[in-house]
Image 1 (cartoon, rainbow, N blue to C red):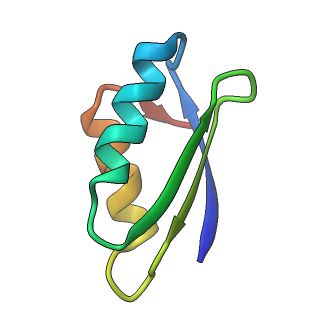
Image 2: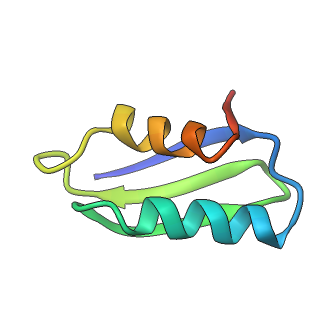
Length: 67
């Protein structure tokens, strides 16, 4: 499954690395790509192993807000 999450508060490459690292390490996530310009995080994941809610929660735990 693929989903796009709108995220507020991302401003630099550290933000990109923080989100891609934390979300990318979750079981069931196959890919994650952050687009700073659009404020979007594109995530491909196995929805039998992880939910989009858990992914959003992980992003929020890094200090960012879900739009």
